[in-house]
Length: 131
Image (cartoon, rainbow, N blue to C red):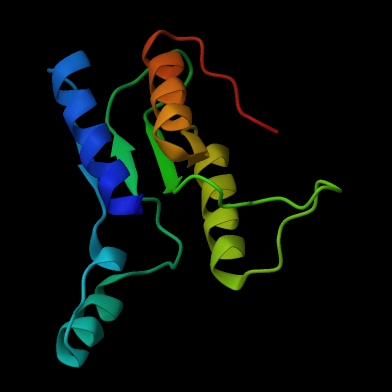
């Protein structure tokens, strides 16, 4: 299953389970842009590693929820607990950490089931950062 397939499943779930919630997917990384379009897009972005999904709903102490969605099987951490040596994942990890420092809930979510659980926990006020 591709990440985009998970985005579609999550969008359907959000529309059904939380019909009043405001959310937005960042699809730029998923698009095939021309060189001109990619250049324009890059000029508009301040940071790399922006998360895939933002849910604009306060919950508990958080202003909203950011999720970096990965397909099943993607590893973020090695067995020893250190981050995998992938520059893009490092950028995403750093962005999520920065968002948490600013009062947002922000996580990697691997696969549909994990993404759904994080969303449900967040919406029910039971969110706890995954270490």
